[in-house]
Amino acid sequence: MKNTLKKLTPEPVIAWLRGAESDLKLYHETMRQMRRFRRNYARRGTNGKTQVESRLIFFTHQIEKGLSHEHFRYGFGRTVLEQFAPLLKQLKSMDPNVQANPVWASAIDALHEYRVKHERAGKDLSAVRALFDPDIWNMIGEADGKRGGILVIKSADKADNASKTFRELSESRHSLREFADERVSAEEIMRCIDVAMRTPSVCNRQPTRVHVITNPDVIAKAMPLQGGYRGYAMPPALVLITADNRAFMSQDERNEGFVDGGLFGMSLLLALEEAGLAACPLNTMLPAKRDDATRRLLHLLDSEFLVMYIAVGHFLPESKTCHSQRFTASDIATVIA
Ligand SMILES: Cc1cc2nc3c(=O)[nH]c(=O)nc-3n(C[C@H](O)[C@H](O)[C@H](O)COP(=O)(O)O)c2cc1C
Image (cartoon, rainbow, N blue to C red; front, side):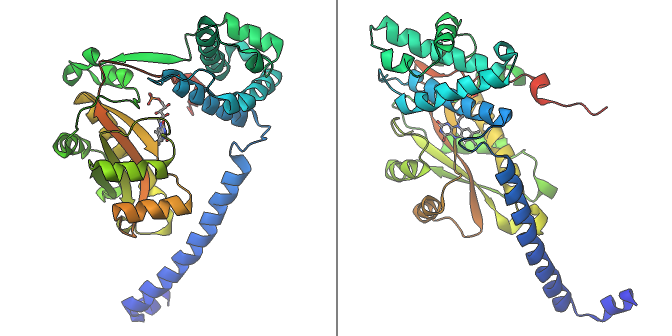
């Protein structure tokens, strides 16, 4: 009976029915995703340990960014420190073995560098000290600075990147936000995009699109809309990775573009590193107004959505960047044997 009905129903009717069913599922599954996100994300005022750790990593990163600036500004980060200090206290009270916690160690080490840099220059830190519990302030003073703070990157160390193993290339890639005052051509970037074309994608449908921007005026308009790059000079080139919804076939795939575009982004970052170009991925999870303005500025198709930017430039002879300490494999992996 079911098969006979199927045979008798014209294809446009089947397509319409399937479309209506898919629209309903799209609504319900998006709401379900929204609810899961709301239950779990690291919102301000959170009491979950993992969420507190996420917020601490965020603030550690803010301090590391400030420390790594070529034009360093003493006294930076006051508003960051105001949130940072109580979160450290919160984590200390939640984790009986906090000294072994990698998030704690990285935060304390970044703050150590902040403290030492200011004290060496004879700056008054009394207002910053007042934010922290005395015992935490002492731990910051006594830290060894090995798991947080800044790294120094030298262009000379990049000369043989093309012959490095994957492990070496991956370990030596770092996000850089300050570049040499030298043009990057679209051709240089296109060669790296060619390398990244081997990135896998769902059923090989290749939803990723790449916009290479070398026009300084367009970059100067795009970056303030991005919002996460304040305080730095404009990069010589900017790459926007998007995904095209026209590659997807059902509501189940509504997030697939972020996965495929993200994979592509990592390939491209490594291809840029191999080519001896410095880069920094930049987020494009923009609020609606800035998303719309970016779409207009870059003439994006309605079917495209933003996945990430990558700022690209040539290495400075020497530059500083964030330490960005990583968890270990055993911190994040669960084995189901
Ligand atoms: C999707 C994504 C978005 C990012 N957005 C920004 C950003 O808006 N501003 C920024 O300065 N860095 C940004 N970064 C760079 C991260 O801070 C950096 O990758 C992280 O600290 C790890 O450091 P590493 O890349 O040097 O290993 C982003 C990275 C990724 C992967």
